[in-house]
Image 1 (cartoon, rainbow, N blue to C red):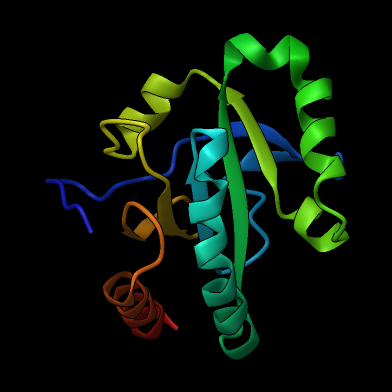
Image 2: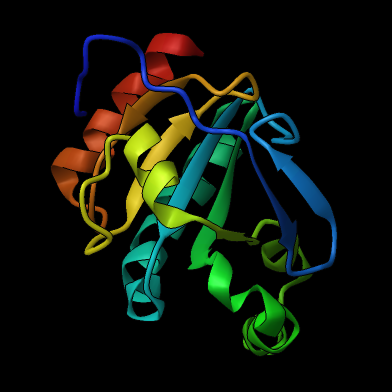
Length: 158
């Protein structure tokens, strides 16, 4: 996990799930511990998918753990959000996955800066509380080391 002089906080942002529910993150996160799989490019979905079995396993064994997928799209595309979200929704038959996929149409630069993300070239999995504390984060697809690090972070706070 990248460390800075002060604790990293998840910035306040608004978005909507693919099922249409409005969210004011991080406050509307439903769990005590939330694995947020932040993606910046459509092709990164394959990397997000590597974390899904890890998230499912933790959710089934750790009370108060849940996961969300957060596609981060430039605010410039907000006028096309119905089309973009509709395309994503049509590719996700599972209602629970649609509920847990929250699209953010935001100014990406300040969002990334707040999280210490320098480039949108990899996904940014992070463990976040509803108060916005980022307890753990990494970059890229699930690997043995990254999964072990996440499990250790979850064990430390659960």
